[in-house]
Image 1: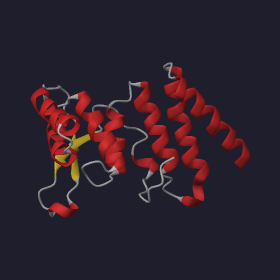
Image 2: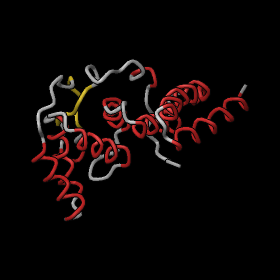
Image 3: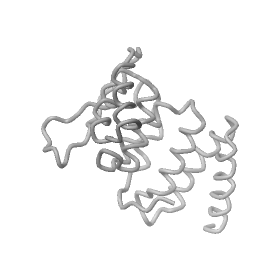
Image 4: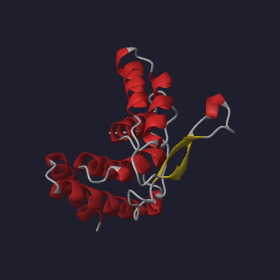
Length: 173
């Protein structure tokens, strides 16, 4: 289970579509120690980004330099590269090579929401990063929606998570 302090606003991404969910642009106005990507519109066409992705892959997985890989994945994600979006989502969710940024992870997974694992990850983010400690039920309801979608797309883990969340929701009733 994730034990991070960062919180999200569940209402911000519930109506996102691939055409409206933001992608990443490095924010040049922040200092290096506080740098975090800012958000822009996702392009409707998906230019390549393969060279940036390959460079990022080499840096992260072969050379063990995730902090150097992250900007490469950002550049590829800005061009609509789906594998780069996965990398950015995962790295920002866990703070690998960048600061933890749950909003960024949600934005990336939202673009990938046709993938059952991305839906499951969205459910996990909403379940574990409850924006309002007083509304645990609301966060679990949102997580349930994503787990249900993942389950309907055939992801067994989505079904397992859905059953667990439904049990927890019944206990809160």
